[in-house]
Each structure stands twice: as C-alpha cells, then as structure tokens.
Image (tube, rainbow, N blue to C red; front, side, top):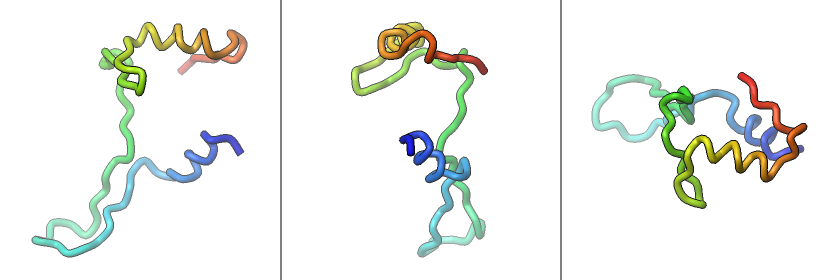
Length: 76
C-alpha cells in the first residue's frame, strides 16, 4: 500500500474531533478542528520546507528534476 493511500485512510474527514475533558465553561457539546485547509494558489507566495523557503515557480522545477515528464499530471 502506498504512503498516500495510508494517509488518506487515516484521515477520513477534514476535521479532528476535540476530545472531551474538563471544561472551564460550557460552550458547545462538539467542537470541530480542521485537520488541514485548502488555500487558493494565488494566495501562496512561499512554500516552507525542510530545505528552506521555496517560491511556487521553483516547485515546478523540483518536480521536473525528480519525476519523469510522463509521470507529471498537474491538472485541477
């Protein structure tokens, strides 16, 4: 099983449930916390990775260096 499939199976929904514990005050019975967020590409100026900050145009170059052209299918 590929790593992406395992990750998708672990996160079935786009939020994580807040575990009930000791409340200081009662506001809601269920609180949802987004696990990740989708950001439109025009709002992304910099990708932060373990290699440092990368511009979006450089990401395409990295993909071209690591993958064959036939393996790259970048479409919405």
